[in-house]
Length: 142
Image (cartoon, rainbow, N blue to C red; front, side, top):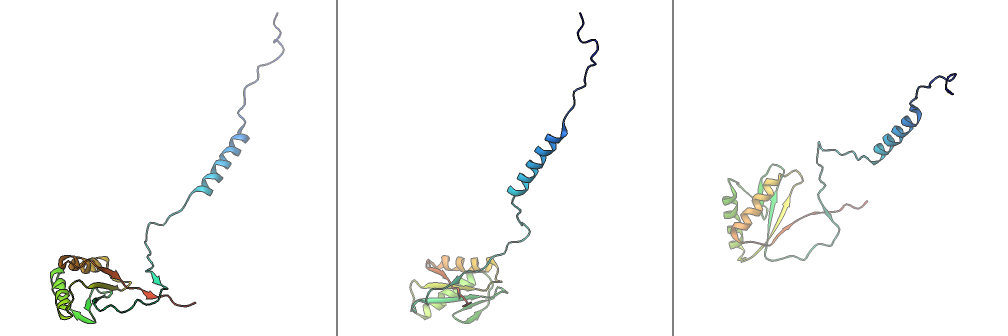
């Protein structure tokens, strides 16, 4: 007794519509959760201070660093030939003001290199000056 004689065998079909729906949902999920980062450049905005100016300190040495990595100690330009020459100029500035442990205030231009600021810090360290601060500009009122 063959009950399946008149019926032909149906080929199984793959229904692509649910597969496409699932792939679209996954694609939308990936597009929403992906973060796009820029690695080509690093933009740094220097800090701005809104606090009042600190009272004048008698034992303060101001060191300026411009965009061309030129140095000035208390407004006097110095020739830079290495960290040791900068340390000697710092020692002379401290001796001229009878300062034993002055505060080194570094005012670096926004275009100054990181190495130029590190040179000042290294010269201060070699002399044993451990109090280092960075100057900022006053925030412009909007």
